[in-house]
Amino acid sequence: MAALLFVSPAIADPASDWKCNAITEIPVDERIAACTSVLEAGKFGQQGTIRARLNRAGAYNKKGAFELAVADYSELIRLYPRNMHAYYNRAYSHYQLEEFDRAIADYGEVIGLNPKDQRAYYSRAVSHSKKGDLDLAIADYTRAIELKLDQSVAASGAYSYGGDLAPTAPGPSAQFNPLHMAAYLARGVAKGKKGNIDGAISDYEGALALDPGYPPSYVYRAGAYRAKQDLARAMDDCDRAVAFGPKDPNSYLCRSFTYLAMRDPQRAVTACDLAIERAPKAASPYRSCAMAHLQAGSPGEAITYLDRSRELDPREPYATIWREIAGRRGNVPSTLSEATTKLDMTKWPAPVIRLLLETMTADELLRAADDPDLVKKKGQICEANFYTAELALQRGVKEEARRLFGLALADCPPTFEEFQAAGAELKALGVNP
Image (cartoon, rainbow, N blue to C red; front, side, top):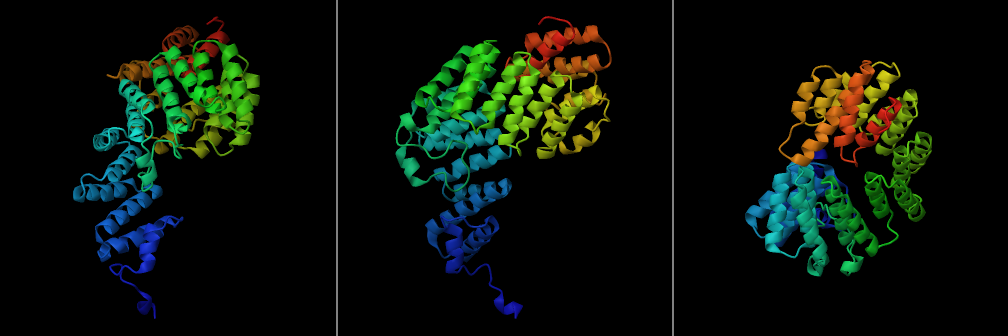
């Protein structure tokens, strides 16, 4: 009887066609099987083939099978080289695979087909930023801000088949288009990374001009004010973020970071605990609370929070690094060696982990921190000095720790958590930073 129920995948029935192309939610594996059946049947014409490949590739993206998605989009591009949707969504797949140059090239193809595609400029900017090319990112964010959303693209559902780095649900005009607001915020972040804090603040204010009640704009601007050591304004922005977004964990983390900058770790703990209440399954608030507990002199509590952070996101390297620092302060056995099995040890901050494992010297770490990208180099040297200082402190070499924490405080970008932590460590060592 089982043989009688078997249907060859090459015979696409109406149910397969419907499951492949349905707008309603279909389980990912069922959609992939249905679209495969449609493609193998080969009886739905050119448009049917395009839809089936786009929908199957989109399902592969949703499943996280990005290589298979790339293969489908590439076949579409081979057959129909001007298919903008395939280029756009293949770019997203490449981005998820951390193939940023290929993503950038595909977004460039979209822009070549439609030079007014605001979302392609925004998404290409995100890819440039992830690659560390901040000037190119800023240029693309600027173009996204300058352009009004192409309504023909929005109406066509161009990006519904795969993935989109740009914010969804664009409004009917630039004034209400969240992509404009996102581009202002993202450009501000890129400017901040380059050290242009005033330019970043200006962009955050551009976002606030579009929506004065949007909590993230206040959170970002608060971070810029902290970088300028204008802590009263920073806290005022955090308070506004809480007022407009009382359920947003980032609003409370904003307060926590600002309290830490004010050298008030107890209030920082209270604020980040409120963030955890609102997002108990997010890893980053636990790490923020751990930082506050460490500065309050409670390494045991810090270890508890860091273990929870690593449980939620075992591939995040900085929670592992701070767990080692907290463990040494609390005389708790190290978990660093076993944690490396879940980390990407081919890229930064893997050299920092090797320093803590004592398989790399401080001089080797500094050499590993070198990079042709000056912005990335500055950040990595900052971290190299900071974590070498932590190691020196734990070995009791306080004078060397003071020197290295001083270098970190002087060189770290103000937005780095190591910048604030270096100031706290210097104060604990009797130095007024």
